[in-house]
Image 1 (cartoon, rainbow, N blue to C red):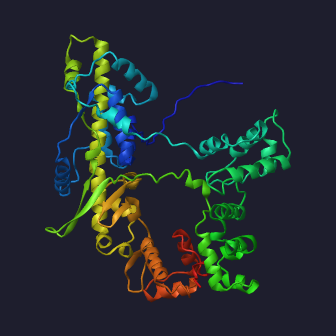
Image 2: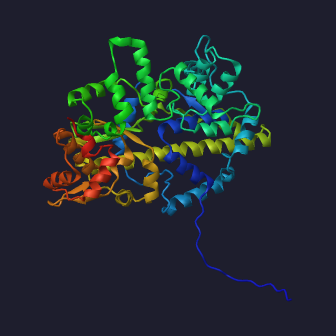
Image 3: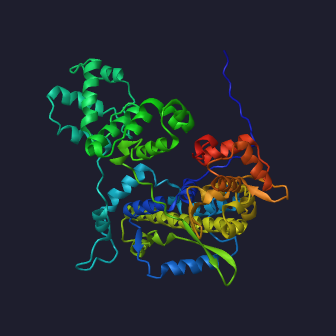
Length: 515
């Protein structure tokens, strides 16, 4: 065995992203609400940052500034997140040379923890609150709604008020723990039995008996059902007990018990052929079933949709005959460098370790402000180009959307396509046609017979318009929908129509038919 050493030369290229560059990319990708939370965290952890109040007319000022920035040169001296722009990396290297502390990743968990510990040694240098002045953060905390009880918690509270023995109570609590968010028990009773604690053993018959008690005791009716048929029958039973013989539901019960499959597939003539019911009587039964819920658990807990905060607003300017976009960033905390700490970083009388700590916070604060400025600059440039490219959408609606690949926007702005992708991620626009996702303006498309480019979203809009205008007593099949779209110059395959129907939640022709 022989050991030897040797030297080799290798020529290659590598591109490394600074932690600060990564931070800038992350901030660019953040939607408004997430960025607001991020800034609040930095205000708490970085002593070199301070909050300044905005003026009352800041929204109008932001709009005017956005309009002015629209015509500015693209070569603005802010840090660009474009992966292909070497100029920003040169500026980044120069900055880290003059600010050695900037190379440290102070945004790691340990860095933030250390900053918080050191920040306790300093008192806030901002103006002290006046006597009687309300704390906005405490007001916001007080106005925060309390967490609502979950479905399981509410059902357990109901069950504990039922007059049953201790063993039935224990088994009922175990069954409730297996209920899903819509109130159904889709776990087989055999599985519930097998997962009971060793101290509590029960037979299948005993668990079914407890489940029957649960179904009769819990509100709303239908909770604890094992399938749709049982859920509807439980609700019919509850309505009949409540209303007595004044409002009989015999037709509805008959439809659910014996013809639920035909009913769910809208095969009403088949039900009429197999029973003595007429179509009018079947329709009466269907109207009775509309009072019932297929997800009774949602009546207790129904999570509201998440609020959408538009990142920008698009308005029409009559004087210039164009649409102007401006960012809705006035809701973001307005931050700046604390001048007192900036002076302390240059004061030789301050201990060296403290100066280093302050300088590091100053460096982090400046980088955050630069990243926010770059986000504002890049996002506004992208939005303005999109608004110009999709002018027909704002004038005529969804059917006027044009195919718009991200590569086209990236080439027009002179940035990497990844920068455009990050800029439009999770962003929304407030437009004259409502709040729309920014990414929705980017899609492929096809060409009509007349040579006009039409986006896929425009094709979907045309499909929906055809379905909305059809005769519901004779709904159009997929083949007929293809012919209707062809009449509009849109060449499309039947399987594509079926795919778009699914994406738009449009049922098949048989389910759309009314009798």
